[in-house]
Amino acid sequence: MRHLINRYILKEIAVPFCMILLVLTFVLLMGKILQLMDLMINKGIRFRDIAQLMLFLMPSFLIFTIPISLLIAILIGMGRLSGDNEITVLKMSGVSLYQLAFPIGCAAFAAFAMTAVTTLFLVPYGNLAAKNLLYDIAKQKASIGIREKVFIDDFRGILLYAEKIPVQGDHLEGVLISDNRIIHEPSTIIARKAYLISDPDTLAITLRLEDGSIHTTDPGLKIIAR
Image (cartoon, rainbow, N blue to C red; front, side):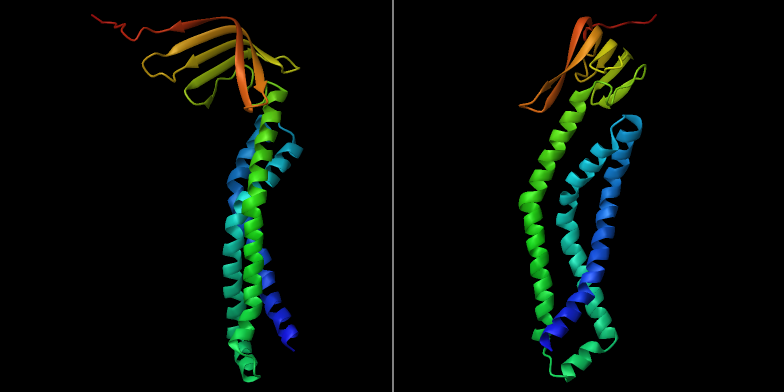
């Protein structure tokens, strides 16, 4: 009899828990989905890479959605049992509140174990895997995030323009860079070619310029209009 009651209460909690977990995780993931879809549509990244990025980002949301989903599921499940007077019937049948709390405690412990595993193992692995995947995507070809004859302002303080990107995408041609990272000393860089150099140790992508020149404005130069 006790096992039957425990399974019944767990079922009342498990169904709303799964539904709420799915909805909350999807809502939190929506903000990232829009950015990832932009990468696929405008930057030419494959759908397989986008799906992998979404999978790697999932654990960072689960550490929040699992506890919240369990709390709401317990309120919904026990609220339904109370509203249908099933708790009153169980108490009149000799079932104590401690016995009713046992399956809830088991569900809480299971959620705690899931959250702990996600926090300690899945989140660090997912962040590292996502970083490595983004690094692999960036080093494949220069056209990822950079389009011909379009000014790119995705980099803080830097405006990038490429006249031509070859089909193989291993370099840029006719590069113009406006560097405003130093407010009082803006500079303009013009180069015939630019290559993306990847560093596997630091997971950094460096833009190497060839056959170019740097034009800097003197901060002390003043123009007086008469």
